[in-house]
Amino acid sequence: MWNGIAPLPTKRPLIRMRDIIENGQAVLEYTLGMDFTIYSKNRLTKDASERCLARLSEAAVKLGPLAEELFPQHDWRGIRNLGNILRHDFPMYSMR
Image (cartoon, rainbow, N blue to C red; front, side, top):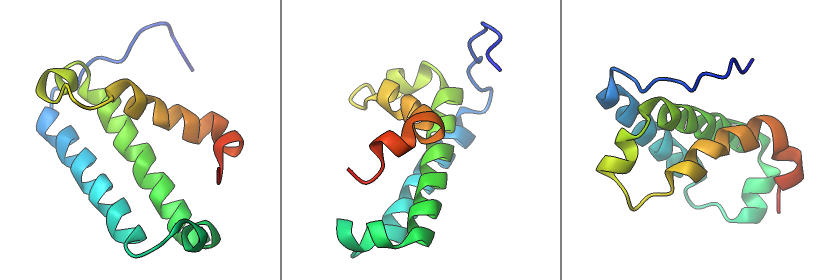
């Protein structure tokens, strides 16, 4: 439940960066060699990939503004918002 207070940046930024890297690599490994048709028919891969993307998004939220400072070329707002899409709006975006 939203309490009106933004989450504070983590005191463990290296752990959060590791979470982002490991979960991103996992998605790449799970989907290696798949095209969209194969991916869309493989529920196990979709579920695992979505879970990794949610963890990656949460780590980006916890990383806070340090993410933009270290890697300004990435769309951190979009990365953070991905968790909301997966939790709340995913059926609307699913398989487009």
